[in-house]
Length: 307
Image (tube, rainbow, N blue to C red; front, side):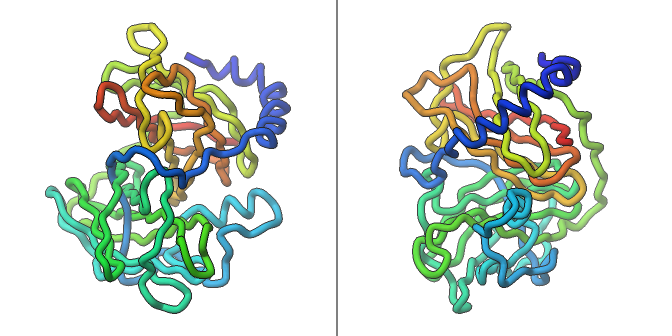
């Protein structure tokens, strides 16, 4: 386990190394074709849950922090693209299908999307207390309507994210993350966010995070996987990488996708998985790391403090 004292002692070294690594690291392309898989979640509503920014560019220049903030997913509109849905509520306690559409600057449904980590659409659902994480790969109809099969949702406020890259039009080749909030009726009970830590366990696996991300800066992050005290080296490819890492910010559920930089070389990944971390704001972030072994998908979660 990487302790807080070890991180503090290494702050200066990591800061210098992180700056150099941020320049050297090239995020793995999230649009390379490859093997397919599946996973959970995302949001909608008839009214935008956050102020829209019709003129914002998903690849705006300027300060790195501003660029990161423009991609936090907290709006249903960006660069003329909009996430729309007729749903304002979804039922609790049972599986349901959520349908949504992405419209372009011309107001028409977008039907041409590029592959992003082997999928044309990634959809995420997260409750306001950062529980109930789902990562889903919805299916699309010819008219541009997407259908996401959501697992049972607990009562409360949920934010649904759609992550995509248009393959035509003014936004061709640009990465977009849009979201809307919806309500799941019922008696909502808030779950306290677990305290920040650098290690967690899931399905008998232990995951340890090493690195010290700083708000508004690009930093390397390493996740090591072990089982029964031994390094794990049989990770299987998932979405054209060995692990998929998503983060949500406590308080506003801002979205961040941490890009993998570990090259896939067959069914023997691990134990160390490297990521390019860009977390725009300070505070607690809930990380969800998904990896596959023996054909089984595992989802681990931990809280990471970012200064």
